[in-house]
Image 1 (cartoon, helix red, strand yellow):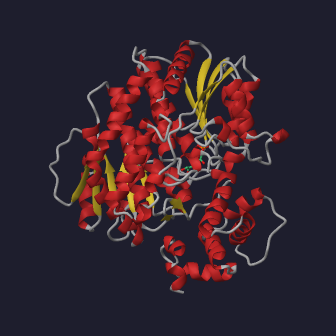
Image 2 (image 1 turned 90 degrees about the vertical axis):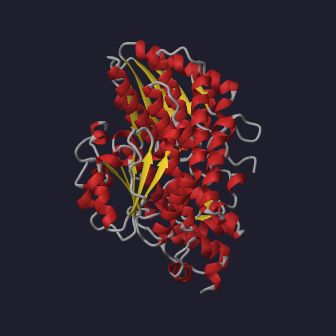
Length: 561
Ligand code: S6P
């Protein structure tokens, strides 16, 4: 157990989340979220003095950069880590402009803009592309503060960039953010990293190089093992917002005081637990009945909706159509990096442009849920009424909106405004965002738990779309079926290629590419093969009869076939 990185471990709090009530699910996720601030086992999370001191150092680095000519701050990461970096860059550039300062924040996300709202997980294994993109974006600048974000201390894309910074110290100051001790950084080799370098080698160099900064509080395992979009993403956001806020505002506050504001705000979410649970229950039923969940919001609130929705696809192998987010203004597209016209553009990015939403939602399956985020509930009044006439459920997440509660009783309100203290506008907005993120994460995670996509606290239908997820899938099969590594790997590979034959002549990279063409339940089928010692074809047949993936682990599916 000790060698398993914290970010991949199972959290004892949520061991039975799969059999809990909606209220229980919400409480357990909340309890896990509080570990980010209060600590886990003998670690103190974001309240650790060493970490707080490092955050103050980080503030000085940012402040210096903001005052230096010909310099920029680059935030880079893969998946959720890249998305959080994008949102922070966008938000704090706006603050720079408001203060008549040049917007200095830049973002890089593995896979480009499409990856902001689509899972393009394979790019995270490529240190070469990571380095090229960093070179490209920093080419004309003299000083660069580089912030590499990888919750698991694992992404080679970010590792390659950090290595490049360490090799060019006259220009780059590297900062690494993640949530494992250096000793648990990933030691797996990837094909594209020369000299067999691993992330661990780079993390070690970061730790021992003067001027480089590693910020790696231990915040405890995720509520759903490995789902770093949850606590990892939240902790990343709190760290970035705290540091950039303090640096931009020339505030004399210390990082500890700002972190305390986040802790109090997130802690207060408990009082809305019952209302969130009601929505989780509705959302779970919605997914079980093949209805849809939609989020509607503007500006960054809308982007948080799009991001939360898109992350369900790799985590739960859910359909793109199950949960989708829509923007009600064109804020998202306006803030994207320019990209060549021929670069792959995700269909989800179309939802970043406001369209006629009533047309878009015309054919929603009966009893779908539409969640309006903050002021968009009032701005979209006629859409709300139309949707209600059709019998869809309406949810209003109120956060900063000052509109009253003059509502008809059919609208479910989650009133998160109670969690926002009176402080300055920038901080209020940042607090509102983290609270919204946690609320949306809870709804989408809870809904998938209720749909049976989680066994105990394991994501049993994860899409095996990169090296990290390939090994995670093998671990899942090994531990749930009680088989050895070789059996788990063989079943996984057969399930990926949809064959009963043994495949020995392909690399991990090829397996991952093959997953892109296989949207079946790759891991559950492999698990079933291991559990019942049967062929791919037999397992697939059983699987097709089993609407609830979780049942295959409890044996319900096997006995019924
Ligand atoms: C996790 C999410 C993934 C990760 C990505 C980067 O819930 O689905 O997209 O963010 O794999 O992970 P890391 O450890 O480098 O931040």
